[in-house]
Image 1 (cartoon, rainbow, N blue to C red):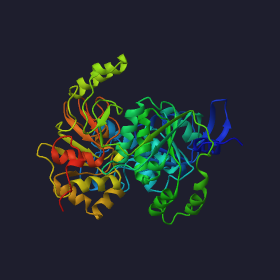
Image 2 (cartoon, rainbow, N blue to C red; image 1 turned 90 degrees about the horizontal axis):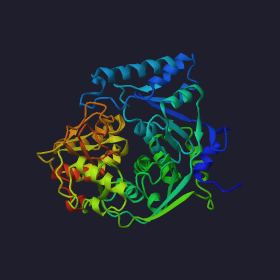
Image 3 (cartoon, rainbow, N blue to C red; image 1 turned 180 degrees about the vertical axis):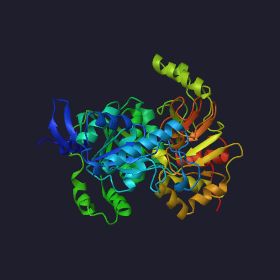
Image 4 (spheres, one colour; image 1 turned 60 degrees about the vertical axis):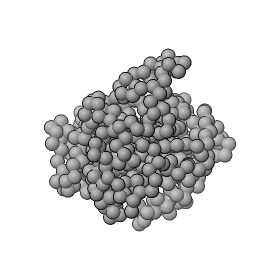
Length: 472
């Protein structure tokens, strides 16, 4: 047999039949749904008098439209009429078809891409589909995860399969240690700034190298989550001992753990596997990164300056830079450090895990939120929230003046009560800084949890390396 990549192994293992040279009928081990991409799919099933084929291999989560006000989880209510209708529709559909739902008041409720791994539903070697682009997150476990469209959701519900176009493959190797105060978020922003927002367009990307091997599983999730911002259809990291240790911590009594541990060594690319494109990078000199524009690839080191559109030889890039600066309200040559912010958001499927909150709390401890800043922490799940409270992280945030919220997608996107006002500038740990992403006219700067925490206490974009040790 020809040498194969990890991606091809996963596709081959899940191919029910080959449809043509480019397409296969791919089996889904797990399908995840949310409230805004599933209603049409269930309606299509109803019209055709079809049932969900395998309800036990579905998970539904109310996450995007849910309010995160700091009420007890049992008292949460979606007030906005259209959003409330979405939540009710999802519950009715799940009840009808016997699908597990983490509803508005469920204590385990949270963001789908954080909840599913916590529940032990994502394992090495799986194929996971979801009507959300950041399903690439699950590549951190050596699982093939990718987003699907609404019509695809209906097909998956009815057949547990999808007609899938096999992707070209890219390997990105990163070697060397990350410098102090540099996180996986900085790494991925740096990578996207290097290859561009279309640099991995259509590819299944595999990450490897000593830098990747040294990342925790939660950090790998951040990396895989944001690879879609370079246009990737999938992101993968070969499972290893770190992966199995994570699964043991979260699912200590799972009967499938021995099999997962035994299979993990085979879930990696063969030594002579060929890729359609390859990149090699050294990590030693990566600094904390911040976006300055309206695309994740418009980013620079925090101690850098805004680029001059006139210096861009490509007319398309020059026009995009001019438009981004006009929207974001910055000028060419301006220093990033020192740009005032009015809002700080720590959360999202990119950076709402317990390790992210620990990193932010380490910066915040003993300090106070700047008087001109409204800062909020939104844990990625009920489990993350409880863990943070047990570890004393919540108290650190509250004492500093942060809002300690209930879990949900929150300020990552303007589909709920948490939005930016026009002109408000936000230091955000989310994944997208598009125009209006966090609210019409809102200005978003993507950065790591530690950097967002530094911005909260300083009142402006700040190099976390310059703050010194936090106070006890």
